[in-house]
Structures are given as C-alpha cells and as structure tokens.
Amino acid sequence: MITGRPLFTTEQIHEKVVELAGAIYRDYEGKEVLAVGILKGAFVFFADIIRALKLPVTIDFIVASSYFKTVSKGETTIYYEPREPVRGRNVLLIDDIIDTGISLNKIRAKILSQVPASLKICVLLNKKERRVIDVPVDYVGFDVPNQFVVGYGLDYENKYRNLPYIAVFKKET
Ligand code: IMP
Ligand code: MG
Image (tube, rainbow, N blue to C red):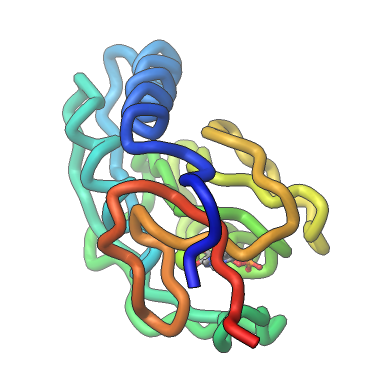
C-alpha cells in the first residue's frame, strides 16, 4: 500500500525536471543528444525530460530488468538495445532511480563498448545507501531514503506506474 503523503508531489517533480533539463542544456549547448531511456521505469521521467530539453534530441530505449517484487535480484537482463547507432553520438542515459547501481553499470559498459562520443547519465532518484557499484551519475534529481518508492513510472509488481507523484510503498502485513 501507499503510505502517507507523497514523497515528491507532481509540482516538485516538475520543478526538478525543468532544473535538470537546464543543467543538461548548459552542458550540451550546440550539440545533438541521443537520449536513451531505460524501460520500463524511466518512461514517464523520460517523456517529461526530453520535452523540457531545448536541444536537438533523437530517442531510443533499453529494456532491462533486475527486480523481483521489492528485492533486486542482483543481476540485470537486457531485453532490448538501441537500434540507433551509438558510435560517435552524445549519449544521455536516462533512468528513474539508481539503487545498487548494478543495472546502470551493466548498461553503461554496454554503451561504452560501442564507442559513443560521450556518455552521461541522468537519474531522477538516487538511493545512495544501497549502492554496491559506484557508477558515475552526472545529473541527479532527488536523493531518497532506503525505502521502496512507487509512482511516476516506478512500480511494485508493475503497478502504480501511473501515479502522478512519488510515494513510499509498504507491503501490507
Ligand atoms: P539497481 O540495479 O539496483 O540500481 O536498480 C535499478 C532499477 O531497479 C531501477 O531502474 C528501478 O527500475 C528499480 N528500482 C530500484 N529501486 C526501486 C524502488 O524503490 N522502486 C521501484 N523500482 C526500483
Ligand atoms: Mg529501471
């Protein structure tokens, strides 16, 4: 069940998206970006951030999964990779949350092996305490406590992704 008040409201998320898009714009001004969203969790954040970004953007996706209910399986399976060529492009990986870092580390290595001109990572949420692998993240929206969160694309058993805000989820006991 969803507990208490939203952790981040729709308005707070929107402000943060605009702020992140501004920072990205300043770093990439004059360049083209290949924005790669990590599905499924990033789909809402991805849609908002690319629309806030006043740059020429091409999009593609990676489909990856590592979670079983609320526990990371500790390994990530990649089901779909970008069809867009990566070589020589300025790739911006966009994810909903970095937790252990295992998924982003694997995805980052995969992209780097295809020799992009540059690679940066943008996440909306950072669950610092749980980090196992130290992945370099260039843009972070909010730090979150070590709790399971849902909404704005994030799920529990593939539900709650459509909540327009982010909330803490607790299993009913
Ligand atoms: P990592 O490999 O442990 O960093 O896990 C990354 C992925 O796990 C994220 O992209 C999310 O899809 C999922 N995830 C991690 N923490 C949460 C959470 O609190 N709620 C929902 N999904 C999460
Ligand atoms: Mg994800």
